[in-house]
Amino acid sequence: MATKSDVSTIVVNTDTIAKIFGLTSRRVRQLVEEGIIERVGHGRFQLIETTNKYITYLRLASENEDSLEETLGYEKFLHERAKREKAELQLAHIKNQMHRSEDIEQVMNSMLSNFRARLLALPSKVAPSLVARENINMIEHLIQDEIYEALTELSEYSPSLFGVDPEEVEDDEEDETEEDQENVTSKQEDEVDE
Image (tube, rainbow, N blue to C red):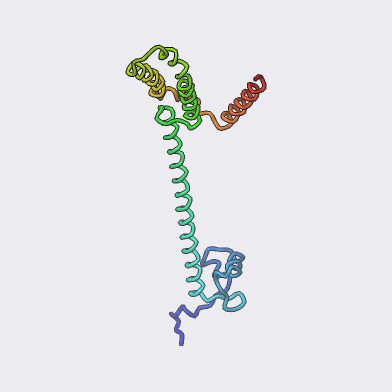
């Protein structure tokens, strides 16, 4: 048997629930439609049960909001880390501590093709001076000097060969695309001229 102080059996109407929760009657009906709170009859709610369910709903909504904020915070962290990594790479490029693969390819192709040409020219360059020689040590010494001279070119690596204009690093990808198109066009014109 319920006493006057037992509130667990109190049933109230929609307007009372709206006043307790600080909502409109319409919002209370929406909460019912969403399954957040339940009626015990038409427009009737059990006070304690309804209040507990609404508090649980608010708690879960708050936790989801905190989770969303944590997710957004993590995304911001990832974004800032990526920006920092990009800035570090640009700085290393400006300081000639790192080079673009296109620059390395161009310089190395040039060095290796020059080295190849020197090696291929070696027999015709050395042969005339070796024709009259009979001393093996002298022949060996002349050939070795020419090989060392050719190898010297490979040993002349310098980071300045890959030098970068700091303004070039700040150019956006559109400028690089235009430059690539110009290079293709000039190569095609060179091929046509040949």
